[in-house]
Image (cartoon, rainbow, N blue to C red; front, side, top):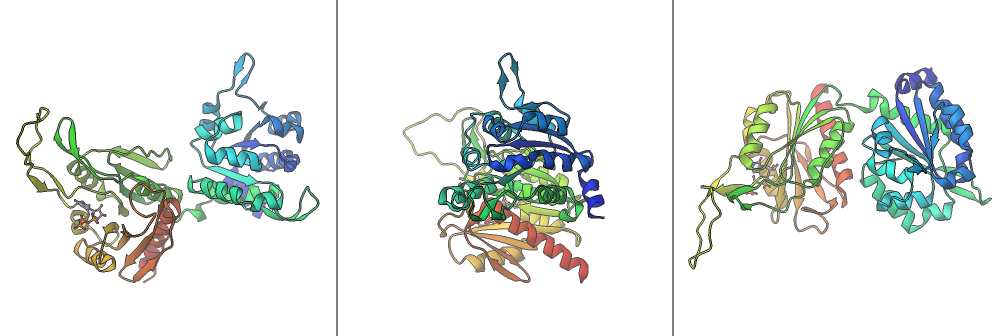
Length: 410
Ligand code: CTP
């Protein structure tokens, strides 16, 4: 029965297996065999060190595809971008401590690292090493970093290690890795499947003249992390993003790029009606210059006065349009009386949930990769510790799933 369920999830899926230099590589042919048996198409790449532990001939035979281990084989260039695009999922198993360190730091001296950096599909990493290496602070740091990049870490197993010691660090068993992958493709992990979501991200720029604008320090990281967390749970996401250098290639996200608060308002109003979930993470300008000069304003000896007028409050406008089936979440960036101000925003903007950021918390707010948030709804508030923006995004999305579920069961 369990085997049948696994086959349903993996049948027709394209899996790219990257094998690196660890004794656990001897289990790779069995892992490929199980994936193929479940109906997946499997291609294998290796690092040069992996071939000391497992033969490319075995891997090619069980996968029924050639095995590549180099970006070029003398005269032929192996297209790492094409391999990353081909796959529905990439799994690096076993992933040695050395490769883990390279991936966490963007190093790219072999085919596995090059494919990893160019892959747009979900990436799964199954570490394998001795317990002391696994517990070393640098390995902990690398695993944490890779997780914050959105990679899925397959937990190591406890047991006998190559050193003869017993402890943590063994690669998960091939059967367990197949199950992990199949769970990823399963609908039970996608409570938002069939729902539409709208997320805003980044700053807005309000033009003064063709070369100057009023903006803010928002990076767009938090909004993108929320869009990805919603899409991972199955939602079809429209991401309306202000000027930001943060991009997402998630297949469940359609990104619309805008510049000003007015453009963000227009795009949000256009799609809001069909959205079940909306999260306004953008730092929208509250004021814009009344006039935008059509030429560069020249410097003079006098002071320059620019009259600012209010922009439209997008969250409040969506709150006024909100229907009972729709869930609306906003952010509150505060420097003082945080909880009180955030609760007020919940009411005045007719939101179901407000995510509070305090600029008084170190590591929270603009530009950082971390955030410290409090999630406030009519049911109460939940304060979370400093964590990666990815983890904070997952906590927000879990709360949204919980609120939707509570709504349905009332
Ligand atoms: N927001 C919006 N449109 C605006 C301003 C803000 O949609 N013109 C949204 C933000 O995306 C965020 C929420 O409103 O979800 C709160 O933003 P924040 O800047 O904290 O509050 P403001 O409403 O701008 O109020 P204040 O600046 O006075 O705190």
